[in-house]
Amino acid sequence: MVDVASVSEAVALMAATGAVSGLGESAALGVVKRIRDRVREVFGSDARSVDTLERAVEDPGDEGRVGELASALAWYARRDEEFAGELVGWAREYGGAGAVVQNVRAGRDAYTAGRDMTVNQRPDSAE
Image (cartoon, rainbow, N blue to C red; front, top):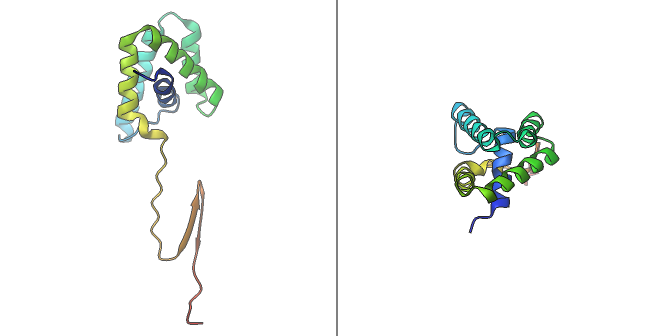
């Protein structure tokens, strides 16, 4: 059983932001272009859905626009099993883009959060 809502959200995020996991920049751009082209093809003459894609691409930081795109993708996926399979494939192969990984190696105390990174050196115990 496919969780159409989850894979639609993952693909909407990729299509809107252009962020895919595990690829270099030029390969990622090619994958995102193919995803967007396929989505436009599936949406076909449905101008409202095509506009939803374009608006999400225009402002990927707007969660409402990305959510609308996810809803449109889910609607089509529920009616087209082949397209649903494509969404699942894209989400599995490229969907890790939303994960955040932080690696910190410090010979002192390190606090990291988002864009803020503070490194605190411990006072010498010899003092």
